[in-house]
Length: 400
Image (tube, rainbow, N blue to C red):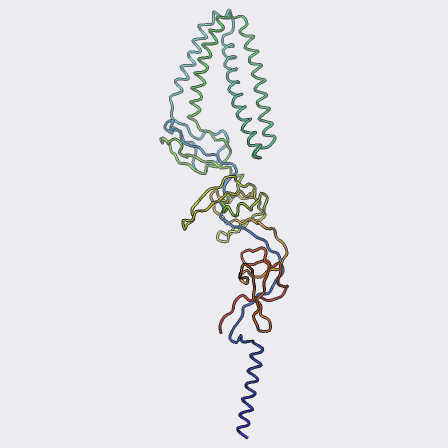
């Protein structure tokens, strides 16, 4: 009887073990971490570090033209367009005075020969014609420059029209000045007129040359902005080509981001961007790519690997005054728009034979299923086909 009881207990134990094995299919001791297939918004970004800069930057270089006599700015100073920044030492004032004295002497010499003509008026008219002629040359150069900027969408149509109007006005002024000069010298003999014009032309050319050289010794600001770099001092003699001063317009701030070329090639003007720098606690949404600079360049990574990169310009809002020029921020550009899709953690997908698969647990047994994937972001991956909403995929398992 006792023996029969033992045999019965052994049979029941074997049956229980079989049922348990059937239910677990050999996965005893394994604990699975799973994730459910979810539905929601997903988009794709590329991320890099950008530098706060400005659309409008002016850089000034040394000319080896003398010693710095006056330095009128310091780093952080706000300057206005046309403000004198640096004056180099020169002795041109004495030379200019000499030429002006020669003009006065010429006035005295020809005063009688002009048959009562007002020499001072004639001299002034000649100088005015020369001045307007020089202004026309500068206006023509400015018009060409504005046209180039307009073609590159860096200048407005109104700026181009203003440049053209300025040039037309100067040409009109020149015609009036020439007519005035002709009326003044009517009574002068041809020989005396030629001699006068030859001598006055020589003096005017000399005076123009001296004044041009004097202008080279003065550096004026081309824009309204803030001095962001200063690499010279009073008494310094900067080398030719040395960067001595930089001014940036703080009202036109942008982010300049150098993306790897494989990313910059898929970035387009108008794409959405954002700043999300957790370390600095700065987040700025609703930004846009404004410009893709046309020139790529090569840098070396910290590991010495050569990388091709390209600068992308992203706009910053007008209330970015608190962001200093040169600040580095983490920037993202959305290269695939947000859309509703099924997704799972990207770690749940693995590759085999050039195809993507996931593992699922069905009736205690692991099964493998091929999936078609789409957008991948930092944590999620889109599932286009192969899974249904609510199914659970295996992330990993641990031996107990």
